[in-house]
Each structure stands twice: as C-alpha cells, then as structure tokens.
Length: 315
Image (cartoon, rainbow, N blue to C red; front, side, top):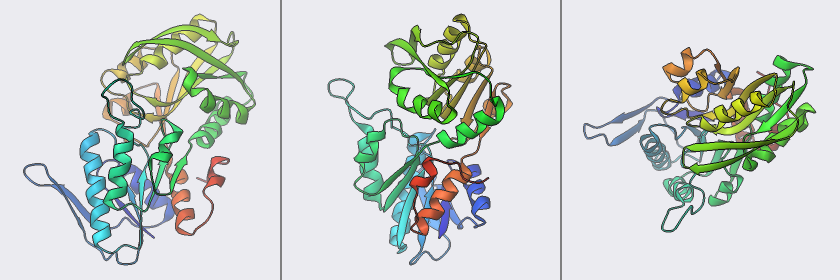
C-alpha cells in the first residue's frame, strides 16, 4: 500500500499518513513556466496498491488536472491498482441539467478520472448520492455523520437538541444524524431567488428554547446557513450551531459567518483551511483523517468499508 498526494490538501494527506504510520511516496508535482502540470514519481510503483489523495477544491481546475496527470503517471509506472481519494469532489453541484444547453459537469469529471486510469474512487459526502452512478468503476462514498455525531454528543451531551436541515434536499442527511442522536428533526423551507442567494420562508418543527444544529454537505457563500440561523433564533431557538462536511467558504463567507447568530460552524478538513478560517472565532475544523485512513486500509486489505458508515474510527 502506497500513499501519494498532490498539492490540493497536503495537511490532510500528512494526517492520513501519520494515522496509518505510512510515509508519503516521494513525488514532484510542479508547474512549467506556462503553468502546465508536470508530475514525476520518484519511487518504484510497479505492482503497488496506490492511493492518490487530492481534493478538487479551489483552484478546482488546477487540482483536477494534477489528479488526472498523477493517475496517468501511476498507470504508466505499472501500478497494480490506483484509487483516487477525493475527499471533496468538485463540480458535484453540476449533477443535472439545470436549464437548456447546460452541461452535467459532475459526469464529465467522472469520465475524466476513469479515463486517466483510476481503478476505484473514494470520496466523502457527495452533493448528490447518484453521482456514484456516474462512475463505471467501484466508488465508495463515505459520510461524515459518524464523526459529527461523536463530536455533537461530546459537546452537547443530554441537552435538548433539534437537528435542522437548511432545505428540503438535505432532509435525509439531517434525519440520519437526528436518528443517531435520538433527537428531533426540523426543516427550513426556503425559496432560492437566484444562484448564491436564498430566502428563508418558514420552519417546519418545534425549535423554541432548544439547541438547534444545522447539518449540510457544502457551505459556500454561507448565505443559506446564516439566514437559517437567523430564522431559528427569531423562532425562539436557545442556540444555533452548524455542522457541514465541506467548508468551501468562498468570497465573504467567513465574515458572513462571523457576523451571524451561529455560535459555531464545524467543518471537516476535506478542504484545507484558509488563514481567514483559521483565525475565525466561531469556525472550527475537525479531521476526517482517521475516517479516510481506515477506509483506505480496508480497501487495501479487501475488507468492508460499509462498517464505517455506522461508527467513527478510533482516533
């Protein structure tokens, strides 16, 4: 088993390496003067079971190209099996035709990863579960729910909790965590006027005097979360926190979260934290290195991965 990483999320790769007590494979991933990606693997890969860790986060196109070129390099180096470990799968929000003459870019990226030579894919909290079907190779979609559940239980104990979905589309995700915590469920009914803007309409469920925890897969502009937090506080919630798998946090999102009623926004390290995120008072990052590391080890040893859907791995 060998681990290799691009430049998109080296801290997470190093954390996985430390968790597995397995050094990262030496490789040079750099740019030519015209910004073409060049990858040179500096160790023998013949017959090896290789895992390439690379989130396709900002800058998405550069990181995606690094992944594709690395996959091609490993295939030409005669690796026995290559698994693309993509903690955050970029382009996932383009999973359907949203209008006439628009692409389904999530499917295009799946085709590119497969054509570049990946034998299987390991990812976490895809924006839409059916994206697994875009791949013609085995694809494991892990969930951050066990990690979040453990953290919520440690921080809130027996407090009166309500797990809140910020929109109708995230109800299944929120219900999963609510069931694990034996907590009630509430739903925010919102109307989106245009991309990047959302308007909260009303709250389905009883939140008065209770600790509300918003659960989502991606926080980008943070408009939805902040509007939802304000609506919950206006409806009498004792406190509002949020647990989100992928902290994209683009533009003025961090400032928006800092000024919002959110007591805390908890994100994973599927995307590396920017300096603004690191210094933010109400944003906290928890690691998915044990989750991904255990999944990678199970894949390498031909063991079940589905067991990780239920219990968090040992830290």
